[in-house]
Length: 130
Image (cartoon, rainbow, N blue to C red; front, top):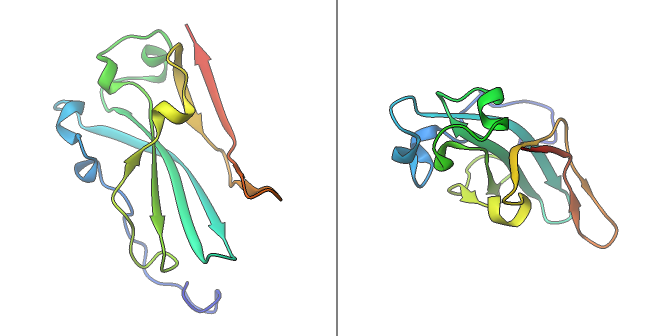
């Protein structure tokens, strides 16, 4: 909504697998995109969306066991909107900032995030290691 919730635009796709910088690395099965966590920072009128991807051929069980090509494993991304969701930035991978190398599974969410008094953003996530 661009009018404080009085009306809503049609649904739109924020991120398609083909828009990921290395979409081809996911192979023929493409990418699974999920676990979205929307974050609205009212003072900046900034909308952030954190989400995860993995190779579409992999199941959670396979990922938890460390099976499949490394590039197909769980990865974490961020997009931003400076116009309250009318347009979005290109996806930026943040995996190395939030996921340890020995973690196989990583999922953002569920739900939204909190901005702390010091300006930091706390995003709910869970992980597993082998």
